[in-house]
Length: 367
Ligand SMILES: [Zn+2]
Ligand SMILES: [Zn+2]
Image (tube, rainbow, N blue to C red; front, side, top):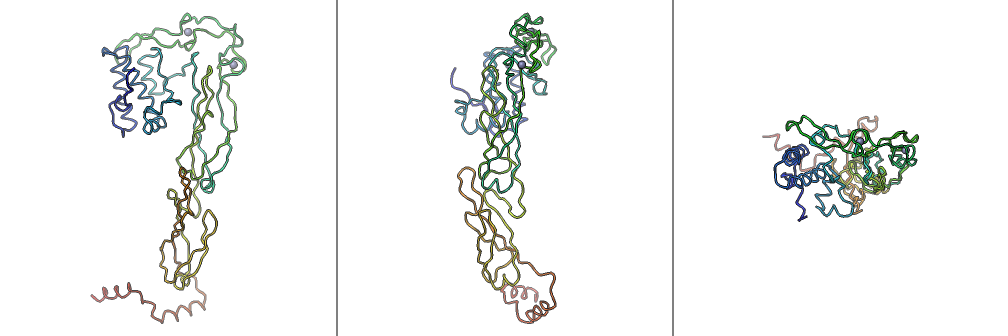
């Protein structure tokens, strides 16, 4: 095959296209090139190309990989597109899959296990420093008794009565294009060509067993809400020797009572008194890395921001710490003792309005 075309070009869409436009472009092209109905040249290979582009671009994680690495992302890991070998599908299968009508394809082909995604809620501190957590996941894997066949023993099969062992059947259907005849996976044996006469008692003929597994999750320092990590091979087990799927952990970092997160930086509001603001002071400020002494100069106004370098959150990639920004809140006392009232009275009789702002404002009042 010649050079692989860009998936966006294949679907005739631009790089910023949203999900509905991708779906729309795919539907249009799938109709145009479907081998059962298309009169176009090379419809079959064009259809496969469209199919593959859609499988990648409609899956947000595959799409972001593709956006970053292009077809290179396909090396090794691969996008795991199903890349239909033969035409064991029909027009209606494609469209029904848009409406959740697709049924699981069971065949003797090697299949990679399905990926799984789990959400994990973590504390602010665990997000800053990283942590080791355990989660319990339910994995679906090939039944260990029947090795996925679903039968009690190797002899508990008979040739499928519906497809006579072919695994496929010809169906006539009323579709968007009028009556079509197409070949589809046999609904009785799901393409295996055989029917089970006595079911495996472990999995009740499903060929799949579920079991719980505790998986250790290393929470990377600096992770934020909405970011995820991939645990390769911790998804569902593959079938017929296929590799396991992956497990994605999507994080949700809980809000902290005092620290407000802005990317790798932290913002904290710190209250000080009138006296501290006027006279200056050295105060203790909390940071995730321990308390830090901060010098408040005399004459500090409320909302003044001081920056504590590298006292923020490590960047999840570079591991370099962000900063902590301390927002000073000068608190006006609301409950004064008799003595304090007296002192404020005395203070009030002196000229406290020596800031240039007072002078400017007085000028403005006289106008
Ligand atoms: Zn079984
Ligand atoms: Zn059959």
